Length: 263
Image (cartoon, rainbow, N blue to C red):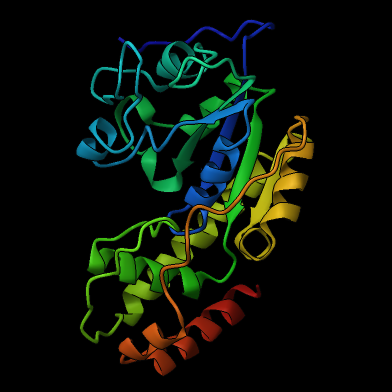
């Protein structure tokens, strides 16, 4: 039997916030900045496609139910009861905005199916942040290094260095498929959630000027200004690119991809 969530009441203890996008686009940096604001709490990737990630890294902490099970849970009911129905952070501090990250590949099965369409109808007043990193080649390279090293976040306070990675090639067919999926997801988010509640944030602007970008963000969210600092660092630098054996060919393929899409 299909479970239908009832519409949210007009008066809620908090404002829902959705961070939409793709992996490796700066969503962790964005979340750490939002979490520094006393009026905002942000959860992780509650709908991650890997069950162990939902149970461990991205689980809800200090809640009656800690993780989403697409086999038995309905996503909207889960959000209403365990995410947006709680007006405190993990330290029981009252907040006015509660957010959650949802990536394009998190909503393909079970109780999370068609989640983006349902979000539009069920949370019409939700704040929508679309995290974008428009250089898809940079995203692909970041993804390759993270998956090969097993290090997905580089924290500013952590002196641990990344494990050495041997030289490698990136398959061109897989690369183009990666870029096409990113382009389709970004286009879908921009079209489906356009309006006064939709706010795109570009990684290049956020990472290059955190104070300015965060001030603009807090203004858009209608919360008081608050000083924040970056807690993550970029994981791939110029010297790392020498490890990609077919970088020149990969760059040519990406240029052709952009021409094909006229972007």
